[in-house]
Image: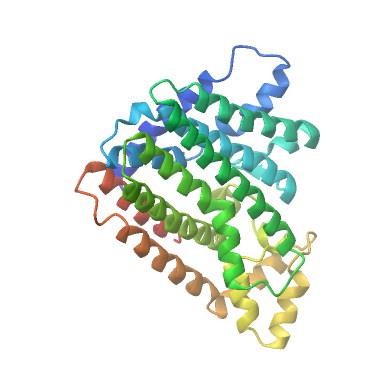
Length: 331
């Protein structure tokens, strides 16, 4: 990540964190419930979605402080999905810390996620700089994204029971599960910033393609990175039987013997690290990692093309730098 982007992300994180924290009162009761709800927020994160909201606002001529609360609401939605996603996947670590359900149990984790969801809408409704019609459009965009996220999560779970998931189905699933919130984050930023319908569409498409690439690279890292770097369990996608683009490609290219070896470990939650490592080696030999990375690179180029008609600006440069960062994560 280049220094300019890193510096800008740090600034955005400070602003967004301050807004997120302001939505929680002092010593609210029951304290353990609010502590659980804030756990992943306090653990950090890059705040890419709020960053997109602020830069989308600026690139159409708006002021970022006018959309800060809405940017924070997007982060509330994102964190809510992480809490519930960790429960569904039985993951024990997120952002380098124990997950909410590991620390406080599944029932409390579920309602902690629900609180974050409610806080998202409370934060939007507290926005004072925007008109009622603008806020209604923001609410509609965020609500539509949330519905898509739920559908994407459901597809992700249902796909675990199948071994015939196509690449097209996978791309639709990750659009709903991941890219749609990035798309919404960009659209609401441009909307509040006073962007035209064409500008809002273009910045939304930029985030759409970037979001798909981000998830594809995430799927690559989920198999190639160590637990300390990734911030979540090593090889969890294989243990959970996730149909990522990497595994879909590998199963399509493997001969019968190798395919059977992969399938014997895929979905086995008790698989040992050496078994996971062996499967990863097979996948690598089949060229599946290279295939996924190439797909992500194509999507990043599509994303950059959506910015061509925007005039030169620091915000535009930051969004291009964000694209470069997303694709550089493969290393």
